[in-house]
Amino acid sequence: MLAGLLLVIFGFLGQNFFVASQTTNATCDAAHNWAFNSKKQSPCQVASALITVCTGSYEVVALPIDSHYAGPANVQDANPCWCNSVVYSLLAECGLCQDRTITMWSLWEINCPSVSDSSFHCLYPQDCTFPAGPIRM
Ligand SMILES: *[C@@H]1O[C@H](CO)[C@@H](O)[C@H](O)[C@H]1NC(C)=O
Image (cartoon, rainbow, N blue to C red; front, side):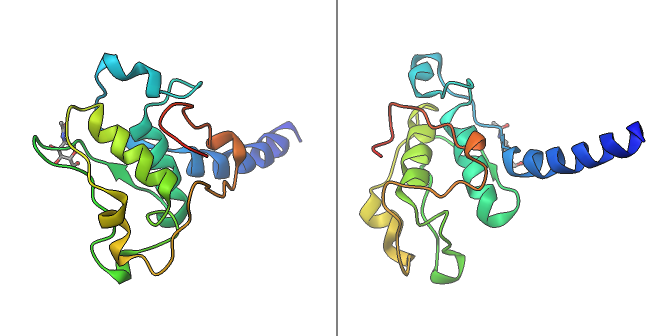
């Protein structure tokens, strides 16, 4: 009985963990601690969690020197997560906090059939704790 209950609870949590899972091997400079959210997640971790909503899982890989995160490479790669200015802002800050560069939103969204500006629909609101700084909502 207890085991069954635990299984059910774990089933629910499992879904949450799936959405909440964020993977990145990018390390943010301590000078950018202000860009971490209240759960102490880096902008790179939060971006990964948001992109996961569209793609199932997504690792934000650390940027090589002199490079930046870019928007969808073609229309087929475009989805509501990549074509979202919150994700753009988070990945821009994720680049800056690694001492790398950024690209402009106008270039980022070039392959997006439509864009969502300044909001992100969170399946599980607890997974979408945004840093107050870099995001204009
Ligand atoms: C991050 O992960 C990617 C792919 O898994 C790897 O190619 C890259 O070398 C890693 N970078 C660092 C700084 O660990």
